[in-house]
Length: 412
Image (tube, rainbow, N blue to C red; front, side):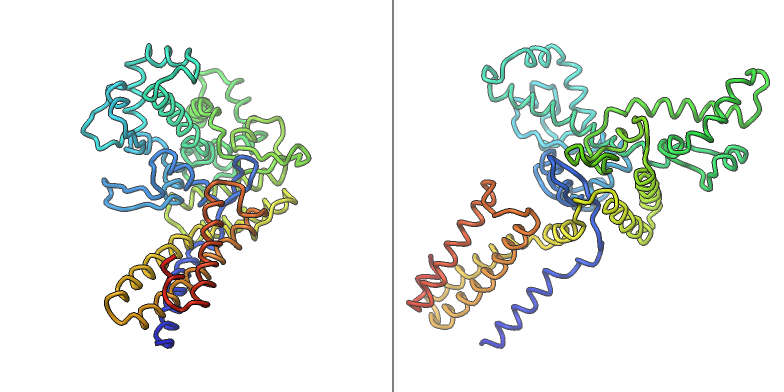
């Protein structure tokens, strides 16, 4: 029996460990003053919009985890604003916004925006009300409005780093040192000195005398100008400030590009992100992983308070979902104990007890890992308090079972 349980334990630990080597690093992002991996940030955002931590893509017949979803949103924002992402459960809200009631509570950014446009008077009236005067439906309408505004800012946060500006003319390519067909907005800003020379030549040349390079350059300039409409999208903070004495505040790509000066480290980080998104869009996973490793190193050099090992630990913590597995073991233990009340009580009691021990070890490991990641005791939030109280209860139940050996501790 003990050998069988040991084999089960080993298989279980192998199961929670598999898949960790898929991505060695997770990109760091600052949110609410804390630096966390993309996997944590993306999970929070998807839960906010979709009420789940995985996105079920019915059009592609696949399920995306939160990190995959965020990468897709950031690299293809114009596609994702038409995908059914926002979960609206209250039918009164759906009716108030003029949305289709047969959409199973899932609506796209476009659909909701159209609903608000057609009910602009409703939105304006709600904005003028105090929060305490709002009804439940009105509060939820305001919440939906805030969510789509927030999503818009998240989705277009990285558009300045995407390779979407086409450059075909060899003269421009050679002068700007461009080796690919498409480059990003940030590439031109980072190489503004060379680009300024081309623009000066364009402005000093009569339009009737423009050649092919002048015509393409004017098109590039107009494309760049059109992209500046998204400069408000500054939600994702991924680049350390040049002056880290100012409250350790990180910056979004748009904030860096709109600033007066780009430091050499910031310039290098921006370049790595440009290459990362270029390789991601071209499905070159190996180079993406290399770029992530390079970004981690550059960020470490830029911010002395940044601890890359905590990002790796938190990425691992997110991947294994250890508390869910611990809870499953507790539930199976209780189920087997119930069987033991009818059939072979001694054997079932021992199996139940060993399962609780394994679940408790996972529970302990999860709490310890969380304390290391957060750098504080696990009692600062309601979620953490629940985890900690349950940990103490299970500990006392195990001690109770060791003393009595009658299944009552397992039952507790």
